[in-house]
Image: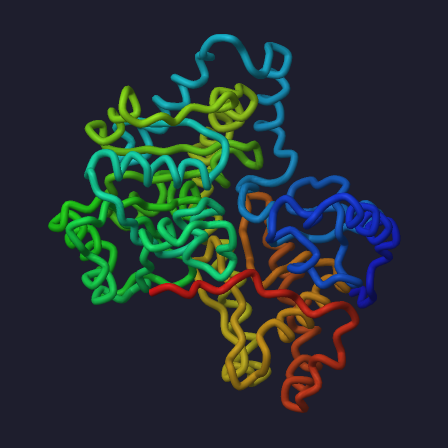
Length: 431
């Protein structure tokens, strides 16, 4: 097993070129140098295939970031790429609606429980905002409750520390609730609460029928319930968390996994609510009907159904969770680290007694990269991850843990970091 820093000369040179032109240099925060230890991790990628990614310097890594979510089947997956190539020969964007818009909508209507009506767009943040806007129009209310991450638009990001440029009047219209805290849900309810939008799960599982109770409380208050299924859609089940947990929200939003990397997003919901887009609520975009992504969506869903991909992700992800926990037991590190989340997307956590979480994550990321794994504390599973990949991953953890444990016990983790310590993203501050 290799144990050396990759040569990232070209990546670093490109980074310095970008710094002169772009502020910041990344278009996706989770992909930027602040989230991959600068000086150790690659900055720019050249290509990818299956579950492996190759940087511009030619280094190959087993990837557990998977495009920060969109890669559900694997990079350059043949059946999806073939569908894109076939459509490319026919055209990309047209002067009239393309038949694939209807065919995708019909497919979503079949597989997503609440999809009485469908809107198609490009970005997850956009459909989140469209859902909030139509909820306000339908309820004739103004306030919004949030739980999770819902993109960069004013109504949500105003609840975080990165809220510069957002008027206080908008910030004051949004409140946050705490996951698995039904009392915080009740406290958020008011006669002017239009909607509650939440990620049905992030890593913590719902307790005491939390989602069912949340649904009932919203309904009693006349508040629309919106599921943000960017991560759960097509992973927990093909129909998302609403299928998995048996809770049907009024509206739901999807992106990421549904087109294996192509840019597309969906808003699904009750017909009586969605009809407000006909005349009252304006939500249109030039590229909503872009045909390559629509073709990729149909091909991706077809492969998911054919191979029962959500079950595969759950089985392979559970192997990682079980193996990781076994290693923690073997090395007597259960009081220092843990792993949580559903098998399709788990996360490594650090106990407070172990030290600064960003420092610990930086060191572990550094050591994973040395051994050929691109890692950012998550295991985002895809259909191309194999048993051999998982076995290799567990062997890498086994190789790292003895030294890691000793550094933690000695309080010397930061001294072993060869790059820059990772940066925080932002804090949510408003409850």
